[in-house]
Structures are given as C-alpha cells and as structure tokens.
Length: 141
Image (tube, rainbow, N blue to C red):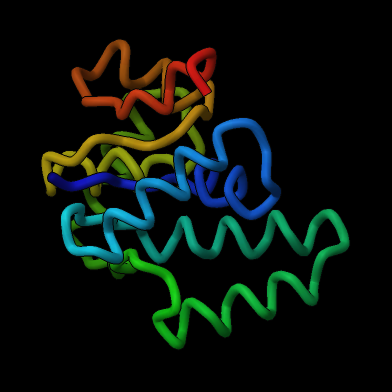
C-alpha cells in the first residue's frame, strides 16, 4: 500500500500535534517494509519554508540535512515534467495551492492514499475522487 504525505502530515509529526502518533505509526510500518510512503520534493520544500516562516531556521536546516541523508522512511519524489503538468492541471481545477496540487498529482500517479488534514486538499478530494487515509478524520486521533 502506498501513502502520499502532504506537508501537513510531516509538520503535524514534527510539532507533536494531535495525530502525530498516527504519523509515527505509519513511519514505523514504512521502516519495517510493510508500507510505502511517498512525498513530493515540492512538499518537502513546503515543510522547509513553513519552518523558516515561523522562525525555526535551524529546524529547517536539520530537516533538510535529514532528508538528504535519507533518515526518514519515505521516498522523496522529484518534480518530473509529467508531475508538473499534472499538478498544473489540478491547480487549475481545484482551489488549492500549487504545492498541494503536487500531493494530488502524486496520489493520482501512484494510486496512493493521501495523508493530510489540509482543508483545501480535503475539499479537492471530495470532488475529485482521491482516496484519503483515515488521518483525514482527525477526531479519531
């Protein structure tokens, strides 16, 4: 099974917000090889700029270092031409950020479940037939 992480899921885990233990569980499953987690390089960049924006530049630098050293059990997927075109198409169709469009594009390509609680992505998923991981139903965590 493939899970597609959004920046929201990563930040939730990093900041130990409600639902962080669920994200941790998914990451442990990926470490054991029973789950495949993917995240777009664009969404990695989103995590970095959000950390910097709130004055956490050291955390952003450490995160990037860890990503570069493959510390996390996810596969960072590049912004290939095909993904860029698909993200542009989805951005044109839904009221989402361009970074969020990469989550949808990657989920389309991999048939993966989207792991997020981002309201814009959730709304697009309602209308676009994307599959959401149970994390989206935040009341359970």
